[in-house]
Amino acid sequence: MTTTIADTLQAAANKLGEVSDSPRLDAEVLLAMATGKNRTHFRAWPEKSLTALEDLTFQGLLEKRLAGHPIAHLTGTREFWSREFIVTPDVLIPRPETELLVELALRLNSTTLHPMIQIADLGTGSGAIAIALALELRRAAITALDLSPAALSVAAENATRLGASNIRFILSDWFAALPITERFDLIVSNPPYIAEYDPHLQQGDIRFEPSLALASGPDGLDAIRRIVNEASSRLNPGGRLLFEHGYDQADRVVELLRTAGFEKIESFPDLQGHVRVSGGANR
Image 1 (cartoon, one colour):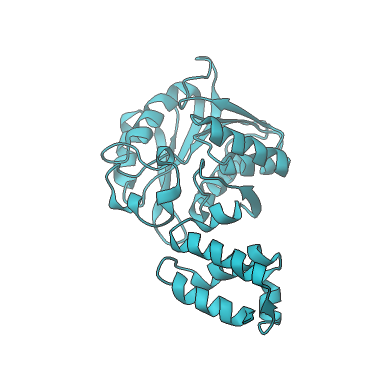
Image 2 (tube, helix red, strand yellow):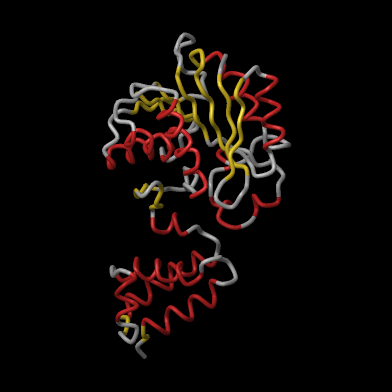
């Protein structure tokens, strides 16, 4: 018995509704992988039949998604800053809200910094933030650091694919591998900021992402504390620190910045109104 595209997508979307906020989209993306056809094809010819091999391949992908595997891991890619990044289980999946950090860095550069800016991206993961900045600021010199060799390998591959040649990748526990005299004009980071016993770590896509990139101590702020405490000695006078944090961490983060001696401290909301990025200027 042959199966039509319409029937296949509807049945899959019904099942995916239990594990996904976008069941129809997930079904279409997986079917595109299984058939090699784009999603427009499915809408134009919903009555077309799948081959036995296409259906078998699709059902295998569907089972993995129903088990909780992220779409980005099944497709091997995720879009960020209008570019397609390779994604593996070794890196955090780039998320739309993190684009706010890139937007703010670019805005800051256009008003207070300069074209040949020195930037550090701490915990670069897939390289999404560093590469987005490198492609927008071609004269900037960007240093992308990560503790994971596997993550750095993914980031370097993404940089090569996307033509970001003004980045160097360094294996480092935050600033540890850098010469003590090296300074930056801007430091950015999307560090781990979830409390280590938060039940959300056992739910949804993040179950399959590296815990090193997600959890950070009892209150989720261990990594941010270290970054804030060490950043002033790694910034030029007037240099800026910007980092992402949890939607409910802004007050505590601002206090950390104030205690560390930062000036012009600000916090910024994402499109949903959640305060997601904070930062300040070095004295």
